[in-house]
Amino acid sequence: MNKIEIVQYILKQLFLNDEKLCVLSVDSDGFIIYDTDIDIITFVSSTKQIIKKILKLIEKTEWTLVNFYWHGGGGVQLFLSNSNEGIILDLYDRYWSNKKLKIYFNKDFVIKKFSFYYLPSAACELTYVLLKRFSKNLFESNHYDRIFRLIRIVNIDDPYLHMIEKKIGYQNFNILIENLKNNLKFSNEFIHENYLKINRTFFDKVVSFTQDIPRIWFRIIHPTGFSLLFLGPDGSGKTTIIKKTIIKHEWLFRKVKNIHFRPSLLEKKKYDIITEPHLQNSRGILISYLKLFYYFFDYVLGNIFIFYPTRWPSGLIIFERYFYDIIVDPIRYRYGGNKQFTELLSKFVPKPNLTFILIGDPKILYMRKKELSLQELERQIVGYKKLSKEISNSFIINTLNEIDDVVRFTSLQIKKQLSLSALKNISKYIGNV
Image (cartoon, rainbow, N blue to C red; front, side):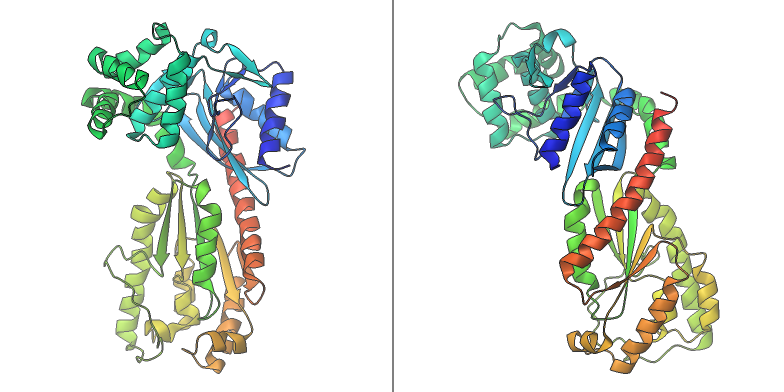
């Protein structure tokens, strides 16, 4: 099944199971828009019950849950994926919300059955679109197309539209209606003014934050982010594969953070391109150990102040090189201390969720980058293979294979790990429903 088929399959089965779902992400003809998050309002069962049914349904397909966000209250976001594509379902229990506002839906305003789901009334849809766009401080041409279509068929006296007036005020509401009747777009000043109105007062924000504490705490103890590590000698293709990995998976996360070697929390350092990594001699024993501990504490503190704060709000961290590289290639880091001590210290360094060790034929790697000798590349490949046995959830990949095949393999492992984590998190959220 492709993403259109899987969504239609889920909606049909839920409909046949007497669920009433209102889909908000639709075009002018009522068909679902699949290139964005699909917003769905539930009216019969709770979102927790709907989630259980969806997970049961996709067990019979090649699709799986790969991530899960709880927005607070009855709002959840499900990330479903197969080997080629993905789809995001935003489920809300009788309301739609983001951090700035809530839009409540009364089932009496959801009047039109379409296929295996329901559509909102024109007033309900217009209210949803306008308030959502004002809350995001952004109106684009496709949004205006939808709004101008709705204003032509909506009853201006519909009581549902008073929700807009309540949020932006009587005067601005009248200006809004007149603009739309004349097919006039809003000025940036008008959009921003209403964005500020919807953005609530300081007191409202405090109340909202207090109500949001359970969600924040849940996300802290059940982080939905992920961390990846790519290791390998020069010429193994780390940078290229990382770029393709980001493109393939960024839809699953709210932000992506790249870190080269270490977090640099203790020292903000810009990494220049190194063309001769073994040019400088190793430091003395004492300085080497001091520098090693400096790196170690940079990782420990980085885990507290950078790694975890990125992961718990659904961020992806990708490391290119890590503390482990000092074990395999100490000369690059001018380390002249004991290797066994470095190995011991590495056991206490924060561990990424997944590690990919990229290797290949040393002769070909040497032709790609002649920064290290052929003998050194051969030695490092042996070292990385040995290192893989000490790192949990690590995979050795021969990058002499086609790049797309390599990325396909890394994607498969990433989604497997994400799925395990998402199912664990979602079971905590659902509980005994």
